[in-house]
Every structure is written in structure tokens, then in C-alpha cells.
Length: 340
Figure 1 (cartoon, one colour):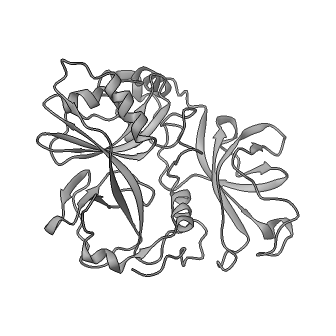
Figure 2 (cartoon, one colour):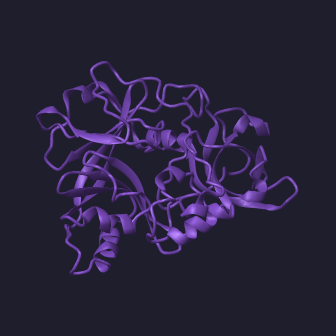
């Protein structure tokens, strides 16, 4: 593969201008048996029980009060399903599932196993296999599984990903993609607004606040956290939402590429409006390297209070941050929980 590099793109929120990929460790939890789908249906936010073999469903693992434990993909097959834990502690998620698994449930719950998820980004090169939306399929010659979720996994919505189990060789075409380094991946993630632990994904947030409405079914019946999510939807009760922010050094009189007279924002820093009212908190921060065309730029994500969502700029330590909605953010449902 080519050497890792950041985006060759002058737009601070732009994605890779060339075909690229990012490999990250994930965990697989296997559920097998005739009750597997019914069991996970009741323990996650997506409509698992009615899904057919071959379905790839994005789902949230949540507490009874709808706080996030993790994000996962559920891959259905004829004998059960694989739960691909994208974010969150797989061991804790496995323990939580095992705790509510009754002897009468015809489910075998296997311990987490390591795997690799390769997210694909940018214009994909010719010959890259694509599949139908919301599905997964095995690639030829044991070169992993191609996942085509309907939601964003950190890149553009619906962009494919590749799942490699331990010992599986990657397909040959992957060598033609630019491997993103961690900073470039974070750049991509922040632009789309994909939540990550611990900044955004923690026990203080619910899926609707993080723009994950597409990961939640409000019409599937009873499940853990359903009552809370239904109330949030029915009564428009989401009190904060994820937003992206950007600060350019030159906007404060400091030439691009030179250190400003004050430190840039850091995670946990509060936000206020121009009138001094509390407006939220910063959750993620990334400083773009100086050689970038947009040198002197710091950007990230923040949870912004409902009362400040209309603001185009918010203040952090006296610095004016430009606020915008992440590209893949899905607005919370309003009134959709009435039939749940």
C-alpha cells in the first residue's frame, strides 16, 4: 500500500480526493440458534427479528434510559447473526447480553473475537465490488465480507466497508487504496460527524443527540430503552445535538500556520453564546498539520444545547468557533414515537 497520508483536499471538511481506506480493530460476537434474532431484537435499537439472511443492520446497544453502550452492525445469516461491535467495549456488551440470556432462550452467545473493519472512502477505483444497500456478502476466495450499510460508518452515508476475520487475507484491490493514518481518519470522521468513544459515545448521550436516528426503529415494539426513545421522539425532547466546529487562526489576527496567542479548544471545554449563555461542550478536537492548504485550522465536534442550535458561531475561551451540522447527521425524529 501507499504510505499513510492526510487528505489532499483544501476543504477542511472535505473527504479524501483519491480512493482511500482506514483499518480499525473491531470485535465479533456470534449469536447462534433459532432465538438469536428475537433475543437481540429486544436488546438493541434496530428491528432485528424481521430481518432476512444477508441483512446488514446498524444498531445501538443502549441502557434502559437510552444511554449508549456501543454501536454495532448485525449481520444476519441462516443460523443466527454476527454482531460487529464498532464502538464501545465488546467485553462489557457481551456481559450485558449474557446477563439477560435465559436458559429458555435458544441462543448460543460466543465470546468476542477480534476482527478488522476496513472503511472505504473517496471515489472507489474500478473493479471494487459493491453490493445492495443494507446487505452483506462474502467476497470471492475468502477475502472477507463486503458490508453495505444504509447509514454512515464515518464516511459518506452508505459507503461500503470490508470485514476481515482473523486470518483472512484482504482482496488484491485494497492495495490500490491510500491507507489513512489516524489523524486523517479522525479528519474524515469529524467531517461526517461519526461519534466515537469517549468524547461522543458514552453513558451521557442517547442516539438521537448524536445524529443516529437511522440506527433506531421506533415501530418494532418493546426493547431496552424503547420507552425513553419513544418519549424523546413523541415530545420533541432532545435537549442537545452533535455539531461540528472549526476555528481558523487567521480569523483572530494570527497568520495561518503560526501559534495563536491562546491555546485552541480542548475536549471538555465549555461553549457560550455571544451573550454569555451556556451553549454546550466540545467533545473532539483535531489540529490540521501546518503543510495543509488550510494550515492553522483546528476543528472538531461538540454537543450543542438546543437553545444555541441556530447560532452560526459560539465562543470557547474567547475564540469564535464556526458551527455547522455534520454531513451525515440525521435529525432527531419529531412525533414519530406516537405509534411505538
